Length: 116
Length: 113
Image 1 (tube, rainbow over the protein chains, first blue to last red):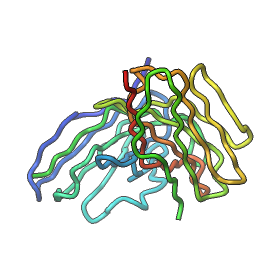
Image 2: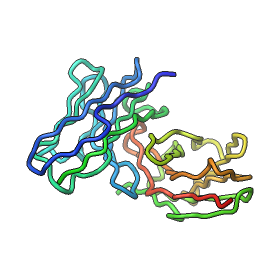
Image 3: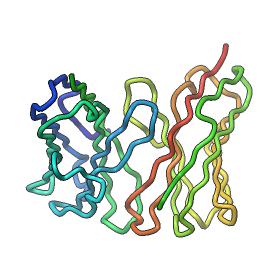
């Protein structure tokens, strides 16, 4: 069964450093999501792509976070500079549905970020 | 703004008993309500979902009910087993975008042997 892949699984960094996370969605899934999950809370959407275009980045802290999906397949989320409050699980999900339509979102295993 | 509230935050039940988790949503335009299970250290996985044109859906020991008038929906797990121990998240689609879902804060379910 196809799954969403993410790497790295764990990342420890010092504040003010740059970090990057990678996600490979299920093949053929047009929509890709990046979520942040703080311990004890539900996932919070950071950015949504349809193919290579950003559909929603209203909750992305754009002064330090950036995301791209250049060829409409895999995606990278970057934080520069990292802050202590960025420590969280970063989850990627993908869906067959196009923006504006509803379908199951399949999640990757996540990247657990610790900022020291 | 759009909001999904989930209760309780923790729930402990005896093995074999039933567990119920409740959620409310704020946007009357929400039309899709998935439930995800997240075991420790693992990815969230969809366990059941319901659309707004249906009042109840069952899948073996799991059922979900939806009351659109009251804007609340619930997850029911019967004959609980140790492997049901996990964190459960409810979610609802955003009224402004059907492909965006808003998650509740989660319920940590523990099954006592």
